[in-house]
Image (tube, helix red, strand yellow):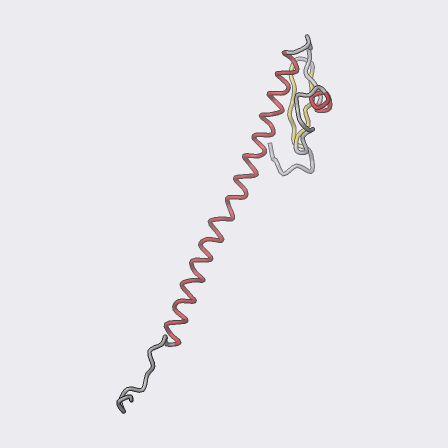
Length: 110
């Protein structure tokens, strides 16, 4: 039996629960903002890798079978130097050099 002056039970008060909810909200906001930039960095690295793969395929094209010029994206793909044509870049040969330019629908900027 309880003593007459013991009126509270052994639980959390409303203020304590509100403080915990606020702390969890702040922590979740920090996590959301810190994770948001990870996707952007991943996209940038994917663009760099795709561009580097095309550049390597261009050099391999020129080094094999006596090619004197550079190839188009279709030639690289059909020649077996790329597993698939790039969805983000286009290779444009220009006689003694080539340009790798982003397609209009590409998420890549350079």
